[in-house]
Image (tube, rainbow, N blue to C red; front, side, top):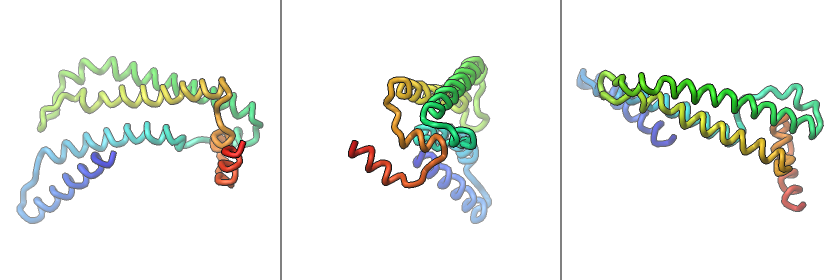
Length: 165
């Protein structure tokens, strides 16, 4: 992600400087910065999913006890897996079309751009499936359940208590 963001900054800033100073630019940089932005966004979605930092609505979940939170966690992860399956299937259906379409300047197959859907759907889907397994086997932590309900207070004290147990 750092490489993609740095590449975008260098390409866009370099193009601005070249257009301002020399009245020219690098055509490839405009196209590649757009592709980098797409990749950065979808890779970032997987990273944020790993950190359990996606947006959530904790209004109901925060009122539930431990068992209710576990049920909601499993249900939400099932919905995530369903969405990932639909996303993967859509990427699969479009793959042949994207493989034969080429970017106008770089002539890169558009499958390299839109194929990031495979990575994202598989990454998020696997994380959701593993979390369901952790909940069902009792290996989900109290801290993770509290974070799922939007309770981030006193994280250090709870983490210390979990380590001592």
